[in-house]
Length: 595
Image (tube, rainbow, N blue to C red):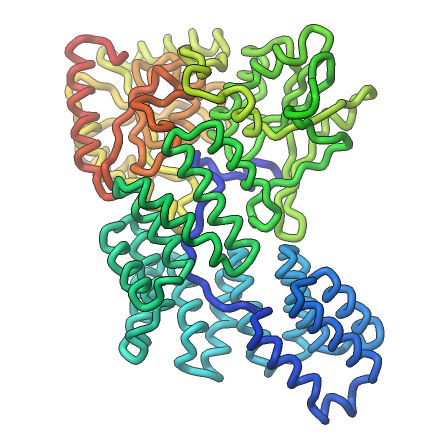
């Protein structure tokens, strides 16, 4: 499995998740129920005494918050009786609370197989499956639980969360509305109703539901976190930060705490509080986040605060999606300077970007990383380093260079791109574009390959691009990867001709980069293709989201100072942004210069 299969093309990775799912497998009430099962005379007859004692010790450890000890005691019980569904359930709880989601999922499945009529196991497993993105499994388990206990608030709420994450927004609203008629004062249900609206970009409406949840429970941390994420795109960044700071003490799990800290880090960057925000962004590597990257290399991680890297062999490991590697890669040159002539920098990046990075920094060595998913977690390997005899002295994640080399806005280089497209390919594509006849050559991106969950609110329907497509004097060139046959056919039916180059727009990034330089302008939202055009120094216009942190509280994109942006005031404010792009295109056609 390649990194391209696992990493999203979207620049905002890792994605902030709406907090709506409720339930705690290790809550006092849940542990009391398990304790009562241990005290059951029926169980005492069937189970060995030693196994029961181990499980009682495991529950004591859970109550004390020592989930590692609880797991060891549950494993001791399973060594005595591996057919104990209760022991598997206790082990699953400990694994989940320790952040070991892959092992927790397996343990829950074992417990459910042995205890098919135990609905609490089904509920716990369904909630974890939803968190890990196994939505079909989660829905079946939650439906099973509700068949035994209809009207259960937590299970109904979590089912609505699953429907929301499947983009079945109407079903989610109906699921919540039915129970709100019976439980109108439930903050949990109002909060999740807000997440259904926020996922669709309707932030103002979502805000009213989050505030209703907080009216019923002012200490409800999930609703306060969600309200923060709604207030930011509505222009209230300071209010959002206040909400996040208030929500953090109420986080119910390590995962929830990590997610809130991630939101806080991105908000600090939005407010321009650097390097504080860049330092806080280290939370992206928190193992309690399902998307957190692990790196498998045989060397210590470099700590710039305590170690001088001069003269060392340093490995920098790219992370997240393609767009992120280009954004964070702007610091590679600083690292090369830091190791000096007696050191050496090695950089692991997405294979499709290696040539562009290598031409930009010939003194470093670039190779590919590989990503595999182990127990639900992304682990990155660096095969080209493993094959070297000398090895490396230290390694560091690519984004961790920001706090070190970009401590203030004035440390961002004022340059037109930094990666280098293949000059021969640029010349080839300029000649091909000439064959299309006169007119401003405009490259178009309009959506991401990943449109799951709340990602969809960052993109517009193709129909909304019509004013741009119909610009007189412009020749439209399709750069959008994926299956866009229906979109192109609709454009053709409307009398708009869009030329698609005869290449694989997803995998042939060397050609896409060269074509992006050859074009007069490349336009799109904040996805990999638009970032690629900016990174290689092409003329790029980006339609940005209302919560895009990359501005760092400035009026430009510091990572790409020459990038021209068209900022949306709200997630649904596409028409205004598209109209401004059209006006800019008309001017570019008139002057023959898009910038």
